[in-house]
Length: 479
Image 1 (cartoon, one colour):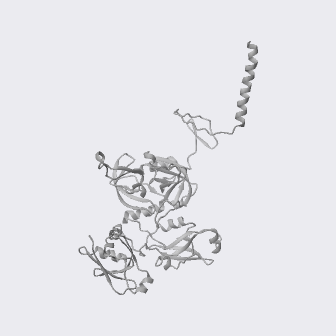
Image 2 (tube, one colour):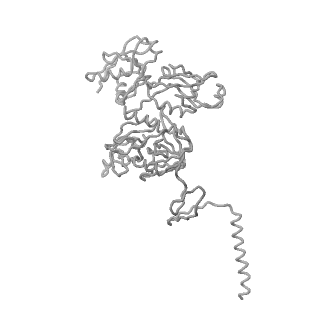
Image 3 (cartoon, helix red, strand yellow):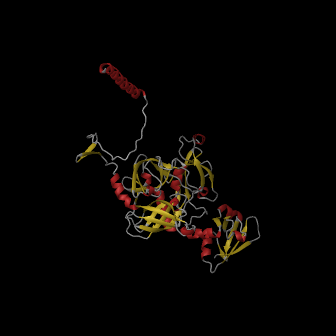
């Protein structure tokens, strides 16, 4: 009986083995993901080319990257930020603040100044900062700049370890960088990657003054990393982590940081003035394309095309025109709009920039005196801007052309906010203010100085509308 069954068993077993072998040979490979809770095991495979032996194990040489040095240098300077919002509620929960957002911040001075993202603290009623030593401190806002998504806050402390700023201009594509922050509230998390690109714009910021010239990296950045540090292998800050591009809501390989050279200027302005002193060139620009470059006689598609020049701006005063192509600012090549915006964004009103541009087949140069939105070169404080915002109007200095036509000195009302104090007086845009009470004003700075010098609260604005000879005056209380 066994002799009869055995040949069939052997034949069946051989057929099964042959079938499995053919299946594995012919089937396309499949990716299989296995998840389990088994402890990890490590296999030693002996020395590999280029390795250094330490003790009984072999390690790849880490000298060129120095990740451990950089991580140890900066983790204590990165903090966790939690914001609370609102004190409304029903019944038992009335008056309890609600957690709004969390993110990271970078200590920039031993006395408690911390840089972070504007979107991390936006619309918050309370800001709590947790230091690396577990201390939790309340923070106050020093200033914000939505145009770069940066903010400066302060905690009452001393002797804190501040981060060292590096030069983001010297950063090279392909260079190793570390992202340090608190993703998902995991404290002092360090991830590594390389610089994937520079001068990247991803259209996430709003406003006409926005500056998007991000450092792109593939260092893992997740929710909670915003406002944290991007550092080089020397442990120097070369960016403030700001955003990721994702379809899932989680990290997918694309993260972006504000360059440290731009961030440093913004932070200093917020510290010294409470607002950013933004110098404007006074041009509208767009990226150059192949067709435009050829029609203008350029051999390369490097530079930004001027599409319009603002009247009364530094660019107009320096002789720049529509269809000029700006090639560099202060000797730094500006191949794209983001690169040019970043360079100009580092300077204040009153600074001069040497502009190299292309016109009619020739390279030319001009020196442009930067002005602000009011056509002024004077620096202002957030307090002064708040005065105008409280009144509900925007002012600007008269251009040289307007002065020659009107034959008068004064300041021009650009806009009046509906429902504001000035709107209630029936003041309209294009009104030329010549006097505040009995004091002559020839600029916005003089207008603000006149308001600060007023004794009492009653204000009388005197002036006229262009094209009308009849003088007008408007009266309101400053309080």
